[in-house]
Image: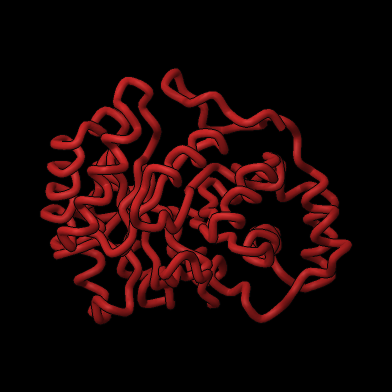
Length: 276
């Protein structure tokens, strides 16, 4: 699997999302994923599974330096002291000295962005995170975060799939040398997998619809995808997307499915999204 180079970070283009996975199921799936070849695992303080993720990382027995581990600070913990404590608590649960990437999970307008970005930089300088970034930042907030950050921001993790147009955010990420990491990259499977653009490409390439959609993601410049699965047999399938390529016509047909504001993850605390 290729890596996306982003402001000094080298991020495996397919990662394992762990949202909703907990306990033994989570640690087993993380270990199985690494055994299947994954080197990028994504978690967050809010997922309440960092202890289980850490157990899975250790059970897999792969050298720490070959893994890329991301965690996130929840939006209620973005004041300077709270952010530092959140990062320290995440590391204690994960059993790691540092994460590869620490993200602000969601913006919080009640805390000055300058304070949050300053605290994020301090965590990096203290060696608790090798790289820093943001998540769920629309373009205006992203520009502000970039302006405020002394260290490079390496990623903006956002919801992204063929149904959701993220052209504005993607362009802003690339202009800043950042990766765009796609969560919910397969939408919810089902309807997306039945779209003729996806189904026909799957038939042409002899691949599953999931593989077609993940290939569509990683074939875009600077895009990383972190699919989540609860089924061990899907792990290898989701990873096996580096040995074929979609044509420009296939890429365009799948991209053409996008609809304005088709979001799975939109909450009372969400920022004001970019207009599609």
